[in-house]
Length: 301
Ligand SMILES: Cc1ncc(COP(=O)(O)O)c(C=O)c1O
Image (cartoon, rainbow, N blue to C red; front, side, top):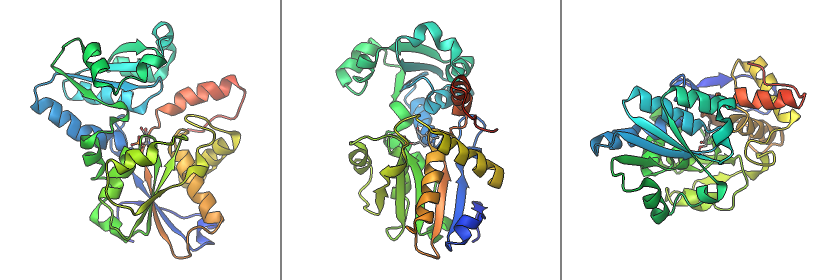
């Protein structure tokens, strides 16, 4: 097939008659990689047009979106504020590689309790939190607003219409919604949620009217940022066999799922599958610190 996507030639796929390619969104930018690049593109453009100099956004301690926003803000002349889940991090954020790097790009932090963090979508809470500062442009957690999804609609190219199945990891669902919107109705878009959340399908439906998609809930490995020796082993052998590094939170679960479904005969012989590598590799450092503490096999770089 003619495209810039990278072909994965492995015996376990070939024996099932499956053609798997990877879209290397992880290579878009050294820091603002993958879907974050897509999600921030139109948000930053809009912030500039409305005259905002400050971008404020939300995330957990190891958030790819927090780091990407810090870097994109610094590259595009915005001040950035990260509202971070977990008051306890106020005292120990310097032990966290994601937050240290985001801070190096000039991001200021506001650490809030988990209870307060849950209110972040409440307009009254936000108004109070911003204390009337009108020059602040707020991007939601994960960058999944309509402008973020508009950016994700640019992930697929016209040549990608040749694939039968398009597979992507799912957190908030914004990236998948963008992919669905730019897919052909005859293509099957499969999302692999990395956490068990009852509301994900509903959130995706808010951003798309197409119905050519499903969610595959069997590969979240116990929840967000949870791994297992089996998943780490899969990542290390995938890297050894293909040269492609996966991240432990999103793309490792996606590829594990695709390989498992292929093994179980879910994809018909002759299927052409495109998997989206959405980046997130910055999270490996923190995960390896955790694995080392537990005396477990680490992710090979
Ligand atoms: C590397 C990576 N892949 C996939 C996703 C899932 O994206 P979404 O939240 O749009 O579902 C994220 C989420 O933030 C991510 O950081």
